[in-house]
Image (cartoon, rainbow, N blue to C red; front, side, top):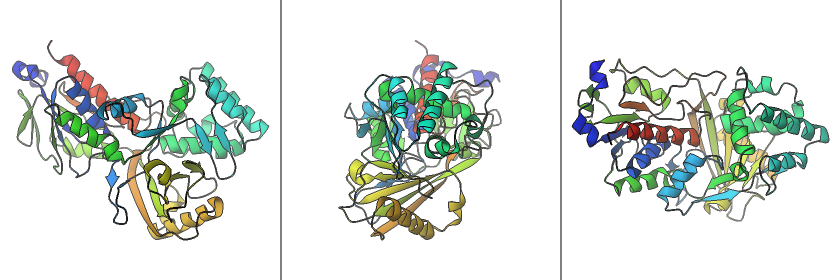
Length: 435
């Protein structure tokens, strides 16, 4: 282990960090290191940056779409701060007050008041919920606020909601859990769900804001981050899958290139393959995964929703986004289906047909589309189950780190968990450098 504890002092004085993976975690680490004058080289296997949140070209469109429709919360401070840095303060997103609409008439709208008063009043005035349901929802939030949203023992969200009316669960809590954790309530971690509620609904008014990118997810952060690090003498190598990773007393060699440190920022299911020949690095757990399916439906350009985002109940479709409002892709709707379910048995054509019919029935969109595209991310997120083991960013090797949404975090597999992990890796390196 002596060799692991030692890295040549000269190399530490002029560090050069290898970041393997150009997704949100890797690029968050790269920007943070570049800010502090540390040289970085990012190795990315794909052509497009962003990992599981990247741009996808579709032949019928002149502008890209995303491999999955993403919505951020105002509480995602790390992600939003990084986005603002790489865009020179010109934030490329819509910031909307917390307003949730569903096709059955339910409406939750937060007033411009300090948290948590804004959330409590939003629940008190919520349309589509009965007086009893509103009372149970408010009682739930107040009870958990008294315990600072901490549980003595983690349980499932279904168990957490055991005394809530089933109608309230269907209308409010279950859609929020699926959107936040991408895990069915029967299997989802109650503690992680409470963490999201705590940070987004009870701390600051702006934390509950809905943040909707107005450009594709690659341009939203990772591609602009690449420009940022290149302007600061960083390097970016795309379409390059790292094949050889060796540890020595001089640091690391990545496909023949020497580096003082390595940040492994590939997806969780790829980590163990990358470190297979490095027995001193502890492998990451084998996670269960949940899919996210996005169905793009193109209508005539005058077709639009009444709101940028609308939820549906008792349908295969869960959330519908109007990309004409957010991305100026007029007539294009993005339908999101989170987590596993019976819909996975359908072919892409059958799924698109079913969803088109649901939107026609509930939102009065046309019965036929001009074109449609289904994008399925089968390993979109890990299943966020109770008491899940998640590794720390630091490893038993002092110059090898793990970055990704699967690493230790209060949050589920979100862009915020990813960027937080990357920033933490960067700071661990910066703090270890000689003055």
